[in-house]
Image (cartoon, rainbow, N blue to C red; front, side, top):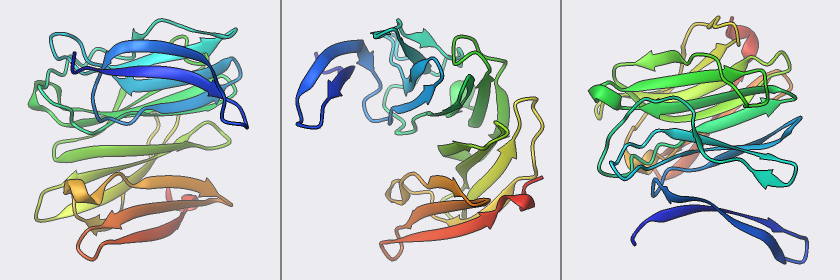
Amino acid sequence: ENEMTLRFAVIDKTGKLSEETSLDERVCDCCPTSVAFTSQGAIAVYRDRSKEEFRDISVLRYQNGKWTEPKTLYPDNWKINGCPVNGPVVVAKENAVAVAWFSGADSKSKVKLIFSNTAGETFNAPITIAEGDVIGRVDLVMLEDTSVLLTWLSGTEEKGSLNIARVWPNGKQSQVLEVAQTSISRKSGIPKLVFTANQAIIAWTDPSISTIRTVSLNIDNLK
């Protein structure tokens, strides 16, 4: 009762649904779910919700026409009695997978990133990309060399920042660049990131004038 579930279905071009399946009977209410495709099949990540209100990230894989059982990506043990509206993001290329997420466990705000080279079957140890006054609301893209670009919000109500960094699977990180100063209020939403022609293009909401702003960045600046 009063619990959100995570469900799956196949929808054909006529709108017909098939393979309707319940994947998890108790998940965080408002955090977005993210899906990517590896060489082995789809992989999904989402913020789970235990009966004790631990809301860590879980992962599912779709193989041979069947979903695996939910598995905790990493045990942050973040206990929170409400949805933080701060979901994870997964990206993939062949067997390479990366997942970024926000955690407020132990009253310590962190943006974390984790890599896999087994299509999500196993993962390396997580990397803390930012901590302190971070807000999260991450987005992520994977480049040809399987490094990733990661964006997130940080700051205070008086001064917020939209940030980007490049991270490699071996743990190497570029410097963090501040893309723009912006609001961190709920109205600012979740910035979105795409990559094309050696350019990172980032879009975000500016609630002060109710508009969408964009910026492009040559990734040669992220070394």
